Image 1 (cartoon, rainbow, N blue to C red):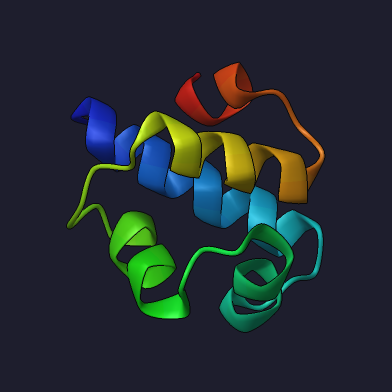
Image 2: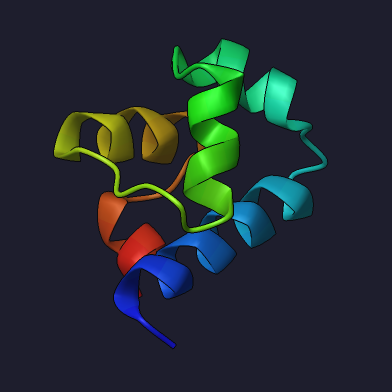
Length: 67
């Protein structure tokens, strides 16, 4: 699996483990739901600031999204 696909799968798994919808994670992180959907499907690469926002909203370190 490519790095983008791994990050996408990890992001979706962490969101689902926390029982969050894309809309809820979007609200918590300040990342638009459509952008979040593109990240979760591996269609777009996130910026570092986006990774930081998502990690904070999920309660993990940025590195966890990239494992």
